[in-house]
Every structure is written in C-alpha cells, then in structure tokens.
Image 1 (cartoon, one colour):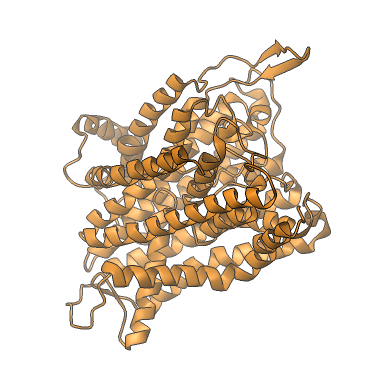
Image 2 (cartoon, rainbow, N blue to C red; image 1 turned 30 degrees about the horizontal axis):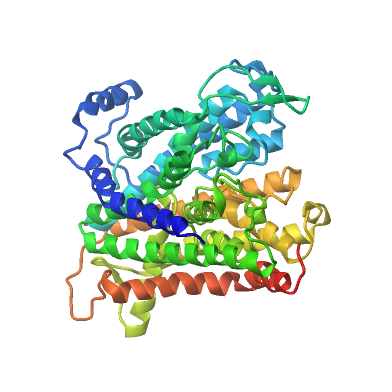
Length: 561
C-alpha cells in the first residue's frame, strides 16, 4: 500500500464528490422549466414532432408503466433479432454467424435491463452493427428508462391530490438529449484521444516475434465504452473488458472510466433532493451511500494487501494488469459493484475472498451504493420507506415520508420491491447448486464454487453484470435462468416504485407535528444505514459465511481454491 496509491484514491473520491453536486444541479435543471442548455430545445421540439409525442400530456402511473414496458419489450425483440440475423446484416467484416438463440435471449435481456451480463466474448461473437445498433442504443435507453422512473417517483412525492407522474416519452428524450448524449460525446472523444479504438476496419492479423500469427480485434469501441460507463451499463466491447489495452489503454483512461461509473449516480442523489424540494434529504442519502462505499473500499483494499502478506508474496497480481496495479483494480471492483455497472479492469475471480465478499455485498444490498442511473435512487427510497415504517412502529404512529402518510398499499409494494431480488438470488443459487448439469459449470471446488454461483445470481438480480468468471455460464441452464432473473428483478423493483409514486401523488400533505420524523440529519442516516445492513445481513449472511468467509479462513490455513 504505497503513498502514491493513497494519493490516487483520495484524488478519485475528491473529484467524484466535488463534481456530483454541480452535475446534480444540472440534471435537476434539465427537468425544470428553465433548461440549462437552451440551444438543444429546437432539437427536442423536432423530436417530438417526428415521433408524434405530446410531451405536455401527463400520465397516470399505470399508463407510465405501460410506456416503460412497451419500450423495453421492443428493445428486447430488436436486440434478439439483430443477433439472430447478424450473419445477413452489414457492418460484419469478420463474417460472424448468427448468435445461438438462448445466448441471444440472455444478451437481449441483459442489455434491456441495464445488466450487460455477457456470457460471450464480444470480438468473437457480435458484429459491429449489433454492437452499435443493438447494444449501444440499449445502453442509452435502459439508463434513460431508470432515470424516468426516478423522476416519476420524485413527482409522486411533491405533487398533491394528483394522479399524474409526468410523461415517460418526454423524460426519455430529455435524459438522452440533455444528459447522456452530451456527456458520452465528450467522453468518447477523450477516450479516442487516449488510444481507444473507433473504426469500422476489419480485424488485423500480424506476425509476432514468437513466430505466430495473432488476430488484433478492432471496431467502434470508444462510442460504446463512453455510454456503458456513464449509463452504469457495464459490459465491454472486448471480452476482457477494460483490462483490454484497446478499451482502457492509459492511466488517464482508467481514472476517467472509473469516474464515469459513479458520476451520474452520485449526482442524481443531489438532483433528487432538488426535485423534491428537500436538499437536506438528498445530502443525507448521499452521506449514507458515500460512507458504505468508502468503508467497503477500505476493507477490500486492506484485504488484498494483507492477504498477499499472509501467503508470502509481495502483491496479489493474478488476474490483474501490471500497468493498472492492485489499488486501481480494487477501487474499480468496489465502484463497479456499488453502481450496477459491472465493467471490470481485472479478474474478480482472482481477488482475495474478502474483496469478493465486499463486491457481492454491494450487489446484494440492492445496488443502492450509489446504484445505477435512476435505479440507484429509487432502490434506496425503498429502504427509506422501510426505515420510516420501522420508526413509525417504534413510536406507535402512522409513518410519514416527506409529508405523505404511508399506508398498507405503499408498505406492501415496498416489501415486494425489496424481497423480489433477494428471493431471486437465494432461489436461483439453490437451484443451480442442486441440478447436476448446472453444478457441473463450477470450475473451482469448495466455498469458492459457491461464491461463483451466488455472485452470478446476485449480479443478475442486481442488474450488475460482473462475474466471477471461473463459472461457465454459456449453457442452456444459465442463459435462461439468469435472463429470467434479470427481467424479473428489473421490473419487479421498477413496477412497485411506480405504484408507490402513483399512490403518493394522489395524497395530500399532512402538517408537521412534534412527532414527525424528519428524513434528514444524523439520526435518519444512522437508522437508514442500520436498515440497509440488517436486511442484507439477515438475508445473505449464511451464504456469505459458507462462501467467501469460509474461503478466507481456509486460505489462512494454507488451502487455496
């Protein structure tokens, strides 16, 4: 743990936490009457005319939900069809054949749900057209979908006696036009300047000094990498993701790609506070998220360094790029699992057991530290509602959240949104460990194999996309089950959030009293943190004890897996 590594980590968090409030103010401004980028308004108006969108038409939560489901259904069909027929489509210089149907279904479900789980290697499976028209487009739309749901929830909180939550199509256009596209354009240009490839040229075959031929993959990578990082999509243009020198060639590109993962998720917390007219609430949420992130990073980094000493080596470099190093690998692992991003610059499977535990726990908490674009905030609000409900039980009064009473309807939807991902992880992992053909995919015995299976279903349920790649998941069982878990958990959380937003919008505000529990300040943050941790602990501690914790102690006794 060198001094320069400490300085790099401090600099990263200083830039992230310093930039978040300013970008948050900009995001909130995009959805106000006075947009911060006036020159794009004619483009927005033109898009409404071309598509026939009546952007002033407000939607009830059920109508908003139907729009969300329709957009994602068409996205699922389009990405699936592009893969199946890619052998007959243009921009395929390597003449790659159509993707096997079950793998195509898994990939389509993955990118529609913002998971970007990849049971394939991009450069050997997908054509340039599929990467651009299928995956990159979904990177924009899936991020914009979650942002729209977050906006609907914010409107539900602030509106009184109203069933309207805004217009989903307008939210999609504004998110894409004013936030995702400008940031992605600038970031893509910076990445090209750093050496990330962006070309339609076919792959090159070169003769190496070892007297062998090597195929050098190319493609329009920079444009996809920009949005997959900024949209917390994850995945990679190349199979090894941001460990590939064409995807992440320099220290600056590594820093910027890590920064991009959390930039919008951190900023949207401040934007949410501004949108609900309660900045203190946004600051409290940000504080809880930042605390969990920093503690997780500290534990993971210490584990990686101390584990090397325990087994008698200077550094644990297996699965890590020498040019990236230990600290930047651990920081990326912590950040990407906290943000439902899932991109990697090292092999998570080679991390120390406790570092793996931190990544798994980040995902198992529901991807709320800071979570994905949009979904990180609305996932956290489910925990906020749980916190307010518990406080109401303790003091013997009807729980209130920001002036709205929480009744049985909201509590039922809240519990559904929290339980569906947790049950999916536990049930999915149990089935995979029970069926012999699925268990045969485990390449490592003992507790590490359990961790690989648990991580896979956690990643799918949390719409993260990272993996412990020692598990062979390109099988019929995993392609189908993981796709179902991705879809179930994406919409199994999204639907309850919209239902809660619609219910809150119809309510009137109640006056504050001496017994009102204010959703800001240290007390609120402490109880919220306790609620998040206790849900994760009660649900997943047995799985974590049998997996990474057991492996850690066995490793200290000299047994490696």
